[in-house]
Length: 243
Image (cartoon, rainbow, N blue to C red; front, side, top):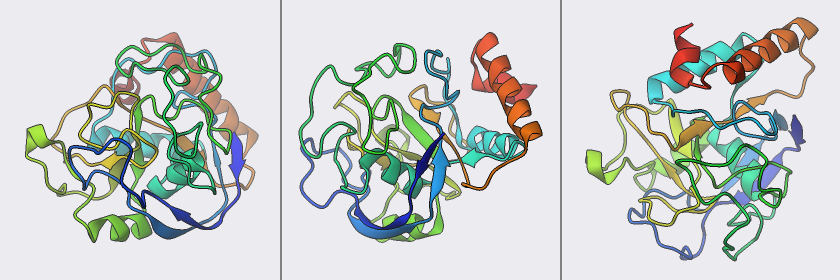
């Protein structure tokens, strides 16, 4: 895992986005955030270099269930603010690889059928996180970020389900994807929400964090076994949570 040092940072979109999202409330606007130090897996779940991306996505209830499952192993879903810092870095970069400019070919362009984790070596954030801007990530909607986004009517729901803010605020979907035809910003500053009754969306994955304090060898071993089983199976969130 990567250790990301905490502090107080100016993070989020403060200028007109390079590509305007269809929904202006589906972006994290610039604000001041205080973040405690945390550890984050270098790669999205299942967190292993060379592993396949999960074959399905997560819904809001599934994100909560996965959060509860990994808590048994000393881990948790990252918070929205943690992911923002991990992706944009202290310098508040708009893209994982650049403060301002979009470049083709650095990160995987396909969120529906991406190459195995780690294939695109240049797709690395200032903090060392890999494969940001490929699939979005379900995250804990921490209280400061929730308050910040609620002031301007975010996180917005997809237009095809009516838009507007979701009814539930425990988790939100952080980040953009490589394609630019999304309703949320296709940058480090994209964010959106889903209600509990909305189903899985393929491009909504997740990332795993934990506090910096050491955890037990037993917890580490059990989590490694859980990931091994996930990778050896069909790499399906639905199957993992049904066990």
